[in-house]
Length: 114
Image (cartoon, rainbow, N blue to C red):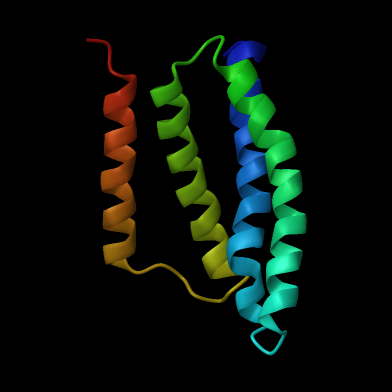
């Protein structure tokens, strides 16, 4: 895999780690006022965008927009699975994995040559 193809994947991985914390990290702190949870999530999301925008900009030189989106969805699900079990203490069940697998199949179809 060339650096041009690998860099967008790594950037999307990093951006998804930030975004998962922005979207779901506050669930461990349910007593924190909602306003502060929103403000913290926006602050975290800034760093997500600092990685996501270049990932898509540079990635568009070697991947199509649908391929980038499909790749992002699979990365999001993998990051979320680790986050859910490791950070929130909510491991995924068989039906969650089955649903995620169907999304992965959809992403695979996006990369098929027609």
